[in-house]
Image (cartoon, rainbow, N blue to C red; front, side):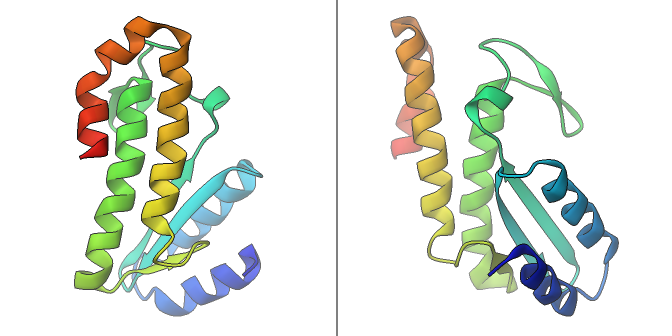
Length: 140
């Protein structure tokens, strides 16, 4: 499904907070080629952008994120947690997932997250030790 078709389906689904749709459309257009997951429900949407490694902060760097700041590890954990959350919520709250089918969403979250972590781990052996708790959590 192309992006235009996707947004037509989203527009038919959303009955409240329709302004979310235009914000999502603008965000996707602003970052061409960036992978994303788009969730829709009666009361709005949730857009999860999956930026490339080059677009994430450097090790230890805090950047503005949502309503505060975060380092790259928190940003990546949030991406995977969001994918997990919406796969679970789909069964309970009837989310429609676009761009990927429902069975691919968690796979996308994991296949997006693991190579990023592997790349960071190869930068220094110390990095893998410091992220050990996160890796154990990720693989559990």
